[in-house]
Length: 147
Image (cartoon, rainbow, N blue to C red):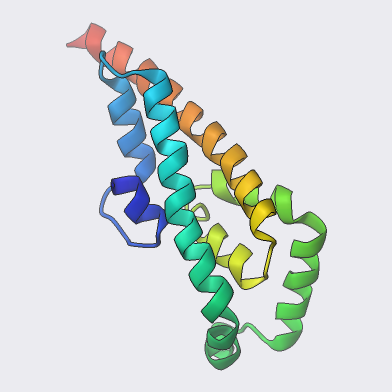
């Protein structure tokens, strides 16, 4: 639920990265169950944000974009860039802390096809889940030896 909420755009006091690493550090954690749960929560939550941005984002950006210095010309440039590099952008954005949650909204805003969004979000979620699983196991083992 925590990852689903975070992926859906709800700000939380503890980032999902820390949550995953903490769960992975527990000795009884089942790798396959954890990774499958993370990927499913990521897809469900980020799909909500993607869909909201796809249907309402353009109107909001055109109305309020000037307040964040997002002109129609800049919007066209970003759209062209997203069309050319959409998949890579999604994977890289999903793996950078701070951009992970914004990426689905931007992909929806610039109307990346849902199949493309889903495929590259799945790839990124799998990489992200495994990365923090390994980090959690590594630091969990170190803490276990120290304590």
